[in-house]
Length: 273
Image (cartoon, rainbow, N blue to C red; front, side, top):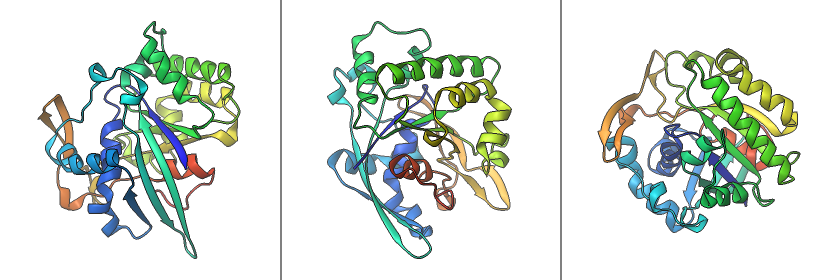
């Protein structure tokens, strides 16, 4: 089983991303014959039950950070993913856990919160094969912030003896946005070089090339090949303003599976599923 951790700042789309994975069996897998997803445990099945509300109705997912007392309070989402290549099928079993955005945000200056340190220690244990890092902003100053956070994260990887064997899939999330969508095909060059060059430089300098890849992810996708408007609108949900699908019947997410596949196997997919 590949143990994957999802980290990123607040509002980077971590919860929605996992909800979309859980929602796939009911929706997207019918349209995409390249992969099939099956929920394996109660946490994942409960997420699947709530996923439509999260993606379509702007509902929130509990527990929030205020309700988490130990690492065991965080759900582990387990999936079977069957990936169909041209002449073969490959089955992956993944256990995915995401951390509250506060953990990522506080890496910049450090935190005295022992619970947050427990999260980081768990994230960097030897049985974790890789981390999916979701980044979403590029406004002025964000590149400096992200670079400082990831500089600190690489230092922690080194102190936990994970500098040479932990894979990092670094993704620009919410890439359905008009400024980002054209760059999704080569995100390292067309997204990270353009919008987050210092962040990319830190990672390239600290992480072995075989353990680092850059991705673009769009949980919501666009309305169609000839209509590249984001298939996303903002709605007010139970925990504030959230993104939801504009047209559920046209839902075609982009890049959900590819980083998980690489984190688990070390191999690149032929397409961005």
